[in-house]
Length: 582
Figure 1 (cartoon, rainbow, N blue to C red):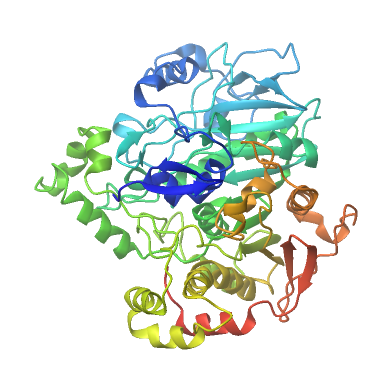
Figure 2 (cartoon, rainbow, N blue to C red):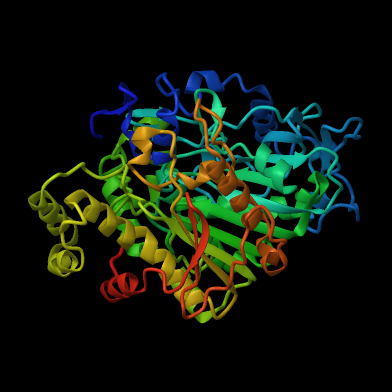
């Protein structure tokens, strides 16, 4: 891991870990405030005090021994036989309570919404379940289950420190107060972090980034944020026993829980949209392509992500390289799983830390085509139109990598970076992106890396998918005008999340009217995806036409909304011919 870096804002410096430097959304917030960033999760010892979550896990240890959890078939329960067998108790007595198939869940008032935090959606992947696909929850929640605390993050590295806990498969829900059952659209968010980092409760200065309360209130929708296994615990692929895609199975299991239970929280179970940013968007594309997700959601939104996945051999190669650095390196093949299960989280996660690079190639610990959860590559599925969703928004930010690249000043540095990163095709790239009086070396390097990894990957998806569904393309160009240092970075990776979740007014930042208006507009477009053609055009909204061969793209900018035809056409034609794999 690299040493911490320094960034300045209004004359002040902030010392940040590599983890935060790579997760640019955290950077964004850090420089809104005049104090050092707090860690995004509690440490391992503090998490042991999360009693409700620990109580549920203790019940999991006793699975099959408590006959009180069994009953005859109840026709009021969902169709899953395991759920039908449960007879979970609880009677709703106040408006902060909801009765689920697994028992009563009590949330808390948060503004004009009720939040339900840390609700488990699957059996927890601990001990012998460490490297097994997600299993449907098969027991009731505790009798007095108060869903008022964010779940522990799934295990990950924060710089060199291991944080999180393995019993992390849970989700957060925000619903408007007095929402009627099965009436409101549902927005399910999948966080980013390279499939190596992140959590539903990601926070800075004790303020949660993915707080869905304002999005739920302003859009009158039910907002859900899910967690899933990360890094080696989510994607390790060594053999038939440890065969990867565990994180993908977690996401599918979460969607099954949501489909089954969300109506009790006010959500319409046939109006579910999934949306994700960065690796979360890659996961959205993977879920669209999975045969296991039919009927689990109807629409999807991809923010700053691609549909490109590593091959099975690439995932396995990185997995075996990692294994070689563990105490189990020389263990006979049939004993590897047992050996790894005996290792501590710290030894596993620090054996060979995977790389996360916003401006370049990252770790291959990702979803892959396994023939079960994913039978074909997402791009193939999209090109063939063999998916089940009806509508898709896809887009990117205009200066995605500006916060993540070296701050070069000379053309020689620019050439060296391009040659090192792109090798044999570097001459073509340098010719396409020359340094001139209008473009500095830094401008060009940001443009190259943003176009190659994000902008043109989004356009590639739009070009392939638009004939098979309602496809809407966007480009985010809004900046933060009242943060002088941030303003110079433009619309960089993750910045749009503060607009979608309307978090702009936290951390001491004062948004201007144009920024607040952009936030309101994005929320309206996102939550009305299923019926955009009939959206009432108020609050400065304009008609968002379907993407067609002319490449109609909606631009969110400081000057308001505008449509652009053939957005980045020649640039993305160039990258389509090169087809660089990020």
